[in-house]
Image (cartoon, rainbow, N blue to C red; front, side, top):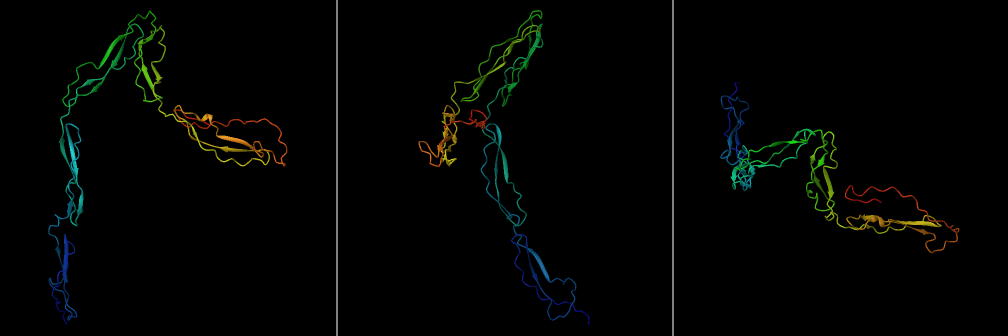
Length: 324
């Protein structure tokens, strides 16, 4: 027999939406049960229908941002600067995420900057003379110490380098070298002792080919003796004596006990060198005791001390330490 076209039931109810934003829901139908076989024809072939749902205001509600923070302080104490503020993402929906800015920058201006005038630096030391006699030249230079800012005055049109004659005396006369006067002592390198200071002098007269050179140092270094010590006065401290060792022999033995340095001296404190770290006494018998009957008389002999051990490493690399 020829196949018949399928006979469908009515569509069922729409299902719940799969999402509140850009979701879907569907409905179904089926072939009636009284048809053993049938043919799907025309456009009536679908047993399931789907359509979108939950799309109202999906884009607007997909991203929630926190409130803006306060503006930061202006990046410049004076003149034109920038200030910034930020915010965080509070929550993101199921749609397209966030595209809004999370930071903002704006120009700011507090007060006008004070003008800074141009300033020439100090002259360098004079160079050595090009000749020891018969006339030569020496040079010195300087740089701009401060450039003009905020409308400050330009530097005066002055020389950046200078050249001067030197050693103009006749080469037939022997000229000995001579130093100039010492500069003032510099400030101490520290506010407490040990500290150093320096002073400098320049060669005022350079010896010619037959003259004697100037003797002595160009720079001098000295200790600042009037300062208080950087280290507080601390006496050496030692631990309590350890227990006596057992006697070294049943007859006429020795016992020892030790102690250690707990804190080394500093500043003008009492040094550890006057404190003993090892104590020795006789035993079996002890001081003012009589030897036992099993011990032969101890022959008289003088005390003999062994050689010193090597010195230990210094407790400090610099600034004063101690060795034992």
